Image (tube, each protein chain N blue to C red):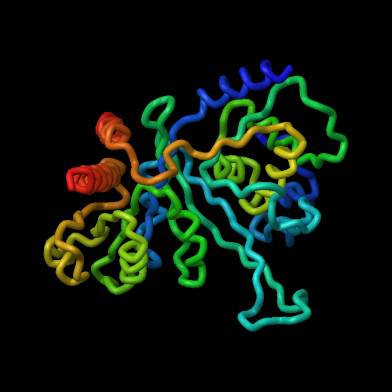
Length: 135
Length: 199
């Protein structure tokens, strides 16, 4: 499952120049994808908030970038914000801005982590301990 | 239309796992990346937070002073059941990224502070931080070097920890040992919770 929406130019491994290897970093500056926006529209969301694509009957959204489409493609099954960033090789800040756009366009839903509020349920903690022991 | 939509939302919501965050902190080279890697079921991923800030003085024009910094965070995942997942975050080491810790600690279950007995003082800032925030933590002493073993109690005393804060000796490269540290942490959090409820 390779992200399909990645712009070719941003992948230096494909570049023919030996002076521009993967370690040199992306040739497109990170926030170019968001047109310089650093904060998402709407509410902030957690690193472990889950993203789910809204469904196959998506409204047309011609203004979206390839990275937006890559996010939608990666979120048919619930996926956390941090995992999405790692999977698409985009920084968290950039992913947040793009998720804000997609949420405004009604293309994804965002769910805050259910157990983010303290205190944690002792039954959940017991389940975690048992699960870890069983690994 | 609306009911179709809300049905679908409800269906999606039911597929959302409970996600618990655990932070892995400690000084530079204490083994954070190693620990995340040894217990994570997915290849530990590094993700970047690109920060935009000023050079430390107020720049009224607002543009010239801006710089971006990239901070790399390690993260890993352990699936307990289909609807329960643990997320491990290796906290960025440098002090100037404290504010990122604030976000990471928001709603976190607890933290593992990794200590290296050769450089014990390097974990002081992490301990101070979690003590101040009231985030439950355990101290895990990463024993790379079998020659230099200290007892858990001696480390606890040297760090001036609260007597009920667990201190464990382990090897971050061993998945089982790293897993046991997580168990220790979660059990400690549960004990604290019960003690709190009983009061």
